[in-house]
Length: 110
Image (cartoon, rainbow, N blue to C red; front, side, top):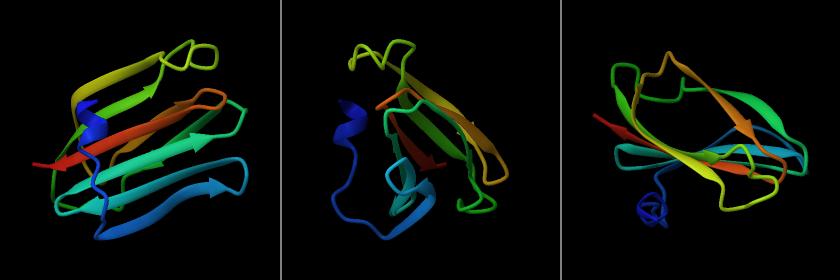
C-alpha cells in the first residue's frame, strides 16, 4: 500500500511507452523528480522490454517495482515487491505480465 499510496493524482508529463489497442499498454507519468510506470495486459501473458531512455541522462533512479507473481493469473493477490534497484536512462528492464495482469514501478531520482 505504501507504493500505491505514493502515486500522485496530477502529473507534469505523460508518455505512452508501448502498447497495442485492446491488448496491452505501458505508460510513464512524471511528478516532480519521480516517474511512475504502469502497465497492464489483456488475458494474454506478455514479456516486454521497458526502455528507460525517457529518464534524465545523467541521473540515477531508485526503483520500487510491484509486479505479477508466478500464480497471479489464478490468484490476484500474488505479486512481488522489489525495492532499491538502481537504474539509469541507458538501461532496459524486462517485464513479465501475467494474463490479466499488470505492473507498477516508481522511479525516484537520486
